[in-house]
Image (cartoon, rainbow, N blue to C red):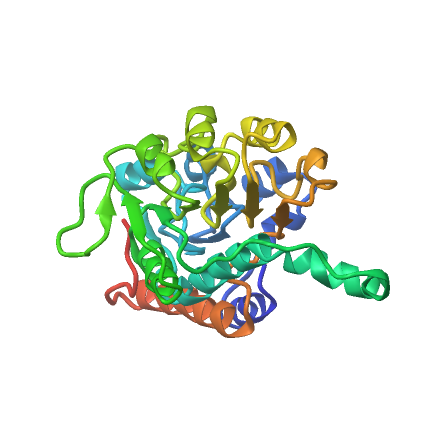
Length: 302
């Protein structure tokens, strides 16, 4: 939980820190008739069972743009409102996507270690790969995908994309399948929402289409990528590299990746700046305040 958000919730409401409860079933039985709101995040939300266990629940306000941890169908069925934090994190996530591309292609993390280890005194670092002019394929051309495309254009990169439907007037090349997108991209960026349809949208076929000179960037959600197939492709040399901010079983990361030079691994920090996390927290608080005051929600989903 974000400390600023936690402190503000404590000031305004009777806050229960559910994640600290050793006996969650006992807690729910004790408080089931008093809890009116849940605040979730990218790793914790509310499944159908939790929603059913809280008969007085009115709203779930997520400290995240993603909604994959919330059973939206159950919320609609029971008339429970749901909010998230869109737009305020778009710029940071897009910035980090470009940062991952540069770090991976120019081997920035390796360069840093090279200097720190004293190896530079004995010879220059190996040559790397340029970013400018590479074709960038984006899975999901929503707010974040579009922001990534705009930044990549600044590097003179041709932009390709896949989405459920072709976007009119964007000026980018549309491909009707992810495999075709991967075949025609040097860099494949995952930037779509996680749904049942997009789980493992990057599978072995897509990875092989991207090929040994292609690189994968994931700033979406870990389950977008079949992680076992990704590890195999990287260790077997069938994929050129990967920049990953998210993983299937966070915070657990496949140890096979730790020894690879052609990967950059981050601990799910795409929106983790002071400025953006404060703005996200303010949206959570604003939505709760609006709901309990009987006003329109700021960022309603359900």
